Image (cartoon, rainbow, N blue to C red; front, side, top):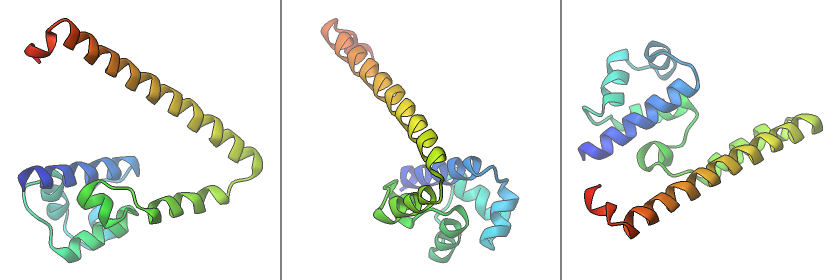
Length: 128
């Protein structure tokens, strides 16, 4: 349970930072206290169901994402809706950004996978 609360807290913290919000701003937008936000982000105490709903709404995330870290079809639809508002030129620019990001992520993942294989081959996995 503690691990789940910490993971949820990290998702709240990460999304709040992504939106450039303070704990006080999130609390105000969600109609909860700043102490509730702080406690949730630290994973110290479980949230009441109504506060989960309020935080999800304030952060524009699904409860599936907050609770389990899963991106849902609703999340994809929300992003698609935002993308559909772009002009053709903006869309192509975003496409370039996504392609560059994906290339970097896949390159990084391959490097991590290669390093893991090298460690196993050389017996280093016993030390990590």
